[in-house]
Length: 305
Image 1: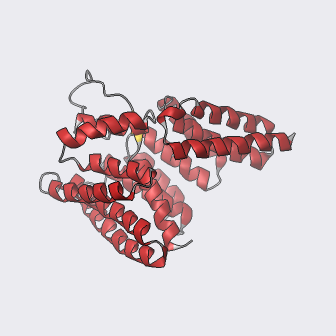
Image 2: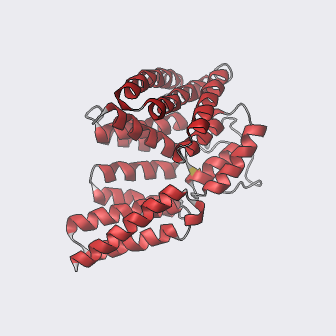
């Protein structure tokens, strides 16, 4: 696999880590407000940033996430997660100018946060370097861009290591690093997949993103039975998110192809269609991809018959 492809896959993983949706509930216990990662000893992240994070990942509602992020960068200007989310949305749209802007802001906010919260400051300094690597790839392309991006990747792990030295069990750190490790385990013989899955499941949060990440990993490893098990768990915890039904549909489709099963292909089609019932809240390019795979599944069902 080329360096360019590896880095793009890695960016997809981090982008996923920064994406999901739930409307802000102003009546939740203030002890937990503003931190979607920790149920005890929450960090001060900010209600609007938390709402945007939840909107992307719990409900898959990207327009709502955009609204919250516009407010969070005004009222919570020192929170690097808000800028990272803005950068990830810009990447989805292939908006290079905005990706460049918010990648830089993520890095600056992460660096400033180190003096007040060394763990999260180092974590998002690493994320900022990662996003800037994505900008280099999109601007330069080819081998030259990949080479420069991998210099950035060394910085990413330098700061992630610093964050891990502070608290190796932190759920936010383990979610982001865990998704990266799963990507490496799936694509390169550098990390043991089962060890990466076990560590993610043990230390990362929120749970629904852990389940989703493990389902993705097993899907890419072509282990469709455990992939389906974890996708079903994610459906139970985030059943309002159309992206979860899309993931489940992909797994069912591949399992159906493998087993030449009409029943599984029909289930896949039903889940593609369930995802598309909320296409108005998803990015247009994602809707196009879901529709394409939906049509492929229908064609395959006819061929199996």
